[in-house]
Length: 377
Ligand SMILES: Cc1cc2nc3c(=O)[nH]c(=O)nc-3n(C[C@H](O)[C@H](O)[C@H](O)COP(=O)(O)OP(=O)(O)OC[C@H]3O[C@@H](n4cnc5c(N)ncnc54)[C@H](O)[C@@H]3O)c2cc1C
Image (cartoon, rainbow, N blue to C red; front, side, top):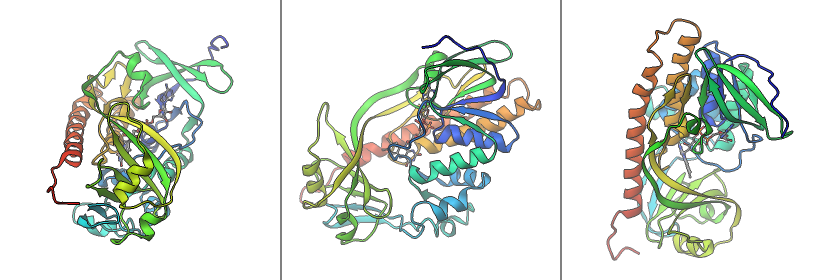
């Protein structure tokens, strides 16, 4: 590694992490006239789809960002029904289904309380739209740039940035720094903040597959999520492109390596041809950071809270963090915020995360352990 190059360029807000939360924070700040730099250690490839369930409040933020129409019309197929279906097996009997309108029709359903409603839009679509909007608003996004730590004094933070491409290091001075750097947050560790709560509640494997039969041979029609309940494991199938692509999430016993052929045949009702495109193992946690702020450094998104995906709260809660923090930081940068304003960020957002973590924990318990009649096959 080369020695640090002490080139210093002042920026009002440095955002670490260009995931959905960091990008939303940068867009919101840009719309309020606050320039930001976003650094991300990855090369920008969107490798595995999570966070497709976008809630109504997030859609209201996307509406402010000028993105709601685009997401509705140019993302996941706009006329695909957003049905959630519980079945014995995919090709077996339907137990119950929750019929929800397609992305295109969604605003009609929710118009009594909001001009926006929930959307189903896998990350392959919405994240590039967030990036494009951020760049259009003048946000500087620097890929292949890892923040390895920072120092702080009364007036500023000085972050150390390492290029993962050419192995060089530089420093960047900012008035505020926000760690939107996910579950393994460098910023959370740098400010010596732990998560509190219940760790490692369950191991899971999510597999991205192409399997045309799930829709083509389905006796019940299309759905965005299918929950077969009679298999030996309660898997979840989530529609990724409205055609053949699905994410299959399998709960695992400790150190288990599942036989996916057998798991799919068991939960679908018979063997079908399919192709594995990618897979990720992940662990369910129910935890919230003990603090959201240390001086000029803040946490937002998964760096501040981790929950089970059941209910679709993780990213949505993080985007709520970004929406709150953006106006508070803008108030401070522009000189109209009082000295204790920034403390309100944690006061406002931490209880929301505690609630979403608890409700997600409840949801997974219900999905995994709801007792079934013994004669249901
Ligand atoms: C199977 C599954 C399904 C899910 N479905 C939903 C859903 O439907 N709805 C929902 O709301 N949530 C869902 N979630 C949760 C959601 O994926 C996360 O809550 C969300 O991705 C968090 O966004 P983030 O921007 O905080 O962090 P991340 O998406 O983890 O992004 C963090 C970014 O920071 C970068 N980074 C990390 N460290 C550094 C560093 N030191 N320097 C520079 N860059 C760094 C990373 O490269 C990454 O790009 C799901 C999760 C799973 C596992």
